[in-house]
Image (cartoon, one colour):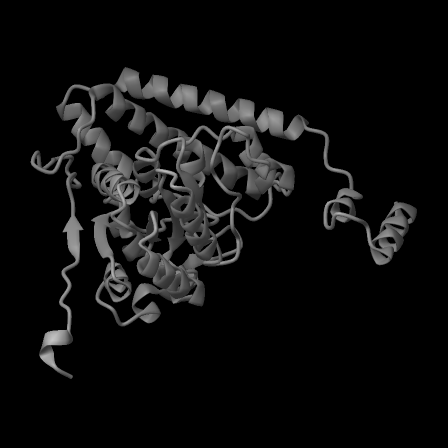
Length: 355
């Protein structure tokens, strides 16, 4: 193949906040002290929600749940850069994103308890429902990006997925369309190293996931996913580029899933305790705490107040979610099609008889 038609690419990597809480001032994004505190508080609230959800699942009070432990910076850092007018397409592990955007906590608990009404998104929020099938939200987001371009809306569309999603056809189809039409889409992959029990090196022979974007004609960036400042910085820049007509960007957040894939999984069967312990040392909240202490933004009293408020908010959300009247069994028939079919009417009648 002639050398002149082979395009070179260079995947940028970014780390601003080290594990010791030190920052590269040249890379530090513009954030006020109040904004940094707000980010910390969102991280604490996200983790508090997550740990309570795990406890509730063990008690049989909610169903299967996908923990975000260890991935909070990838979610809060990116969502903190998203404007209210932008559109968000999540997968099933973006509780931190929902929390950052102000989604009612009780509705999230309601959903994980099996009540689909918990995903009846409030009118003032541009976030789509949780997507359980792997990767199917990617073409949806690209379609939204195409619509925004047709209409001339100066917005960005942000879509989240995991490293396992990069092995799906939806990923490649979505990337191809976004690249061809220069759509205002920001692709964010939370590369937590494991697609359930399949390690990242079994997913692809590519050195990085970020480099896959170059095959489709746009930039891919790999960022330390446990560094909330870097995640915020690259997401904000990608969103601004999308809104100015610069096209899509792919952000690979290099992070780690500390918990099991879901509460239906046992990660000890396929990964070592030593590996998990190494990643715990990279904890995103700990490194931000160390940074804030050096800047005199963190004290024991401040943390205690933040934690108490988070616990109180989560307690209240659980109370509300469990006090809501359960959905009627008939709803599974009534809300499937615009008009009940003869078969549905028969099934609904039988279900009433059995009760």
